[in-house]
Length: 145
Image 1: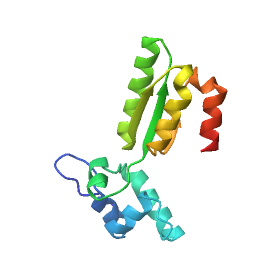
Image 2 (image 1 turned 45 degrees about the horizontal axis):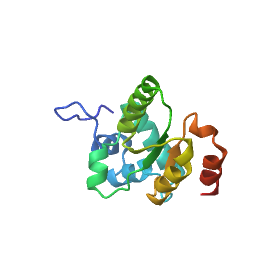
Image 3 (image 1 turned 60 degrees about the vertical axis):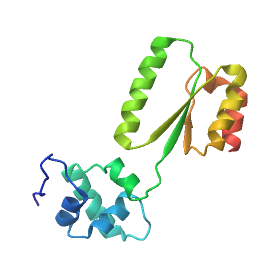
Image 4 (image 1 turned 90 degrees about the horizontal axis):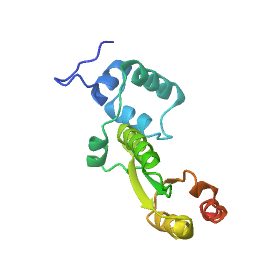
């Protein structure tokens, strides 16, 4: 069950498919949570993904036409140090997960409008750290969506 690896040492979807005894399309369906995959096959592929440390390539997913998850971030903390740490951590995580990040800077007075802009922009979720996460009107707009 040793996968073939390309020059970069990266485990590919084909490596996972060969090790799990399924097609690359089946691996893709499991990774993308397609409900058409049977429970036993899903479990075998997920175990192989974990064992080999396979991580989907976000570039390949975009080329294949997969919808990219996009998160919105409402930022309103006046501390530059807080923003720096928060953004660096956020950027690391979204890069690893292949998720897009849309940042809206605002203050409490225009936070509702900023949240509504993100919703119109059809983000899949919105992160609202303090102090904006404590603004009842922002929470209400997000809860209603």
